[in-house]
Image 1 (cartoon, rainbow, N blue to C red):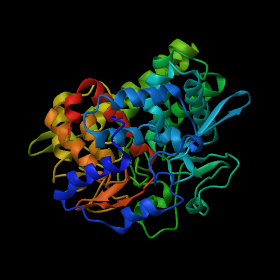
Image 2: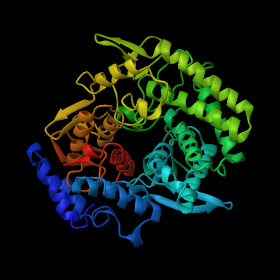
Image 3: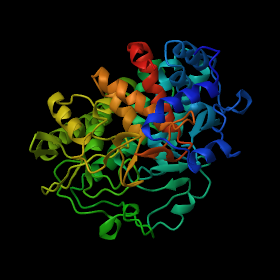
Image 4: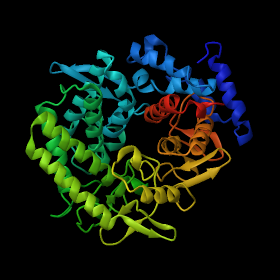
Length: 482
């Protein structure tokens, strides 16, 4: 980015660009800048306040920003890409090995899903920076520790001796020390595999994949097998005292019934909202890819043919079940359903959180291109009950925040999975609006006023946006023009 472009000038550029989209000042946006406790109120924290610094990352920011023709977009990238490293990582050691907790941002706990996604864009830089590689090794090792505590938990405390998050204290489930929240989500036990496989491929380092990691992976596969529910619902149950229906599972906490057809049940979605039908299709498609990655690592690194065979077998079974039970008929052709129960019930929608149907090419492999294209057209349209369009943009939201609230994450994924320059350019312009002049991405924003947003400090949304811009700056910089 041209050094003559200041933060204020760049944000004014964004404000000018979005003026025609009915953006108006709002207390939420003003509070973002005025809150002294907000680490993002003045852009990136000053160097002395950053949780982790890497000269390789800083050089990457400088080099990439020079390839972004839009100064305002370059500023957003420079703020967002390092946000996880700047504000959420807690490096340390455990039993002589790296140990890294990664909080989500404004919630001081480590989600297996979020932590994996937050550090994912740094993998290509890790081979050049031993300190960054050590930090990422610490994330993999910490995730293995968490999985050994409980494969049914979605979130853990940074201090594994700490009590749970305040809203989880009275949950009716089998809480264990160190667990922050115990909402079983299939994607939460897939993401650590994705991160581990990506780390290995990018660095060649096998140090994290020790006996502890091996045992954690065995438990992951066993949990998936149990949650095929061929022998009943399994041990997991969850109830919470709440007036929000998506915060709890029906049927005494075991979720709605399923017919065991080979798919893997999930209690909750990546949004942490309860599934209606427990066979969550984006997560099952993600699981197929993750299990095959695990099988490769088990054979090549662990020399564990039992784990490799079991993972590969389960992946094949789930893949066949998806073809038989997860494809829905619509007036415009077949698409992937969002959730099914094996009895024939199908839920046709999509949610902003990843894995989603929109994000399938980002996480899953061996997809039918035509089937995905029809699914993509369906979910990015009014046919999806959680798709919203207004004067501040368009995109997918979900029950977690509610009606008329678009998630920048979905807009980012729309661009990441697109083969259309027009779609990508449109997404970039909408994401500039979504930042509401704060210099960062948020969890969600009102379709008619991006200044009305939730979660000012949401590191996953920031880092995902940074990943998109870094990719485009290399492959299609012309799409990053003002």
